Image 1: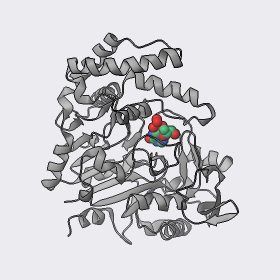
Image 2: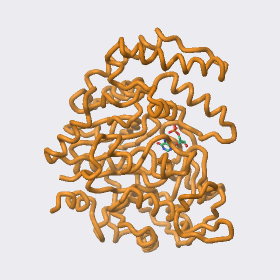
Image 3: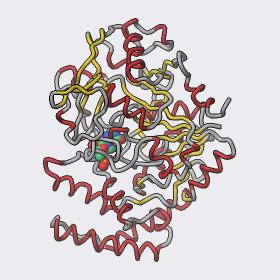
Image 4: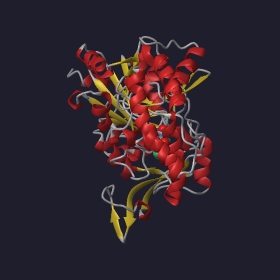
Length: 442
Ligand code: IMP
């Protein structure tokens, strides 16, 4: 049975939550997060209810599904428990049987959150515009081998030794570099050991569990957070997050063999957005950008920040789909473009007097890229109730068909609104179900 990677193919906020929720209802038994942390904000609308999930996989809204937070996720225990309680208060069943947390996932501590915010001040003009959730400092400690993992919280004596060493270094930074008050070891220790106690029912060897599920022919869905252009290796470094966001992050972050990843689907909006700082060649700092922001409600679901909006960048998208080996992709928010006279999409860039058609991977100065656009006629009809591709206005169909051709990867679904049922499957090349079942060799 197949495993499927669903990942963001732009700068995050592509609508992954909705698709994962949809797929977990019909096509998956296990939903796995493998990177990022509570910097993500996956919005799922079910009838009149809106859920914003930060850390817990979007499959949690379907009973009987197993949801897994893998070892590659940076886990803030406060946020984890807050989300569990929030879901329970709304009648969603969450316990150690349908939600598992890797003992090897790194823990975000208060000192990580503080450092995240302080480092941003020090970066000045070069600030990244992080979510302030402690993601970067936590992953930095992981790489420096000074971090603590979820399993460490379950052993108070071991936790004391590790936290004491970590805090000694961090407190020196707080006091002597940032001129801030130090954090007190006993207070932090008590707090995190108590949190560890509450985490215990969820904790286990999630890698072994997911691999066993795959061997038992369960359908595994890997839920990416953020997007390809925020990937620490492939994205617009240094304006990126601190993890591998695409299919590339699954193997390490979920302890899952790369050769067992059968299929990959990218998600991209019909336009582009970015939150925080960093290059964004197709950004529209004009009334069209403002209009897209309002129509698409483009405000961060984690921080509430207005998102920067622009035209779809077919060059960046083709690159993003290629590095994750996408078999197909999904266009979301097509309805947001309704009412625009002309729709544009970047098909190349001009830089240093030359025109390029491919993403300039080795380039340092992404700000120097000037997009080369192709224009398309817009449409005025309301498309939010359309459920068949053939029923879309002619110019919307033409835009989608052109996009598919330009990007060179089949579009398997379109989304025309936030609700679960506001989707248009596309059977011209591959339906989503076919993408999944091809993994069986059927
Ligand atoms: P960090 O992940 O909090 O360190 O933030 C690094 C960059 O990634 C910033 O530009 C954030 O705005 C961006 N970012 C992090 N998570 C998300 C997300 O879920 N959606 C969109 N942007 C994100």
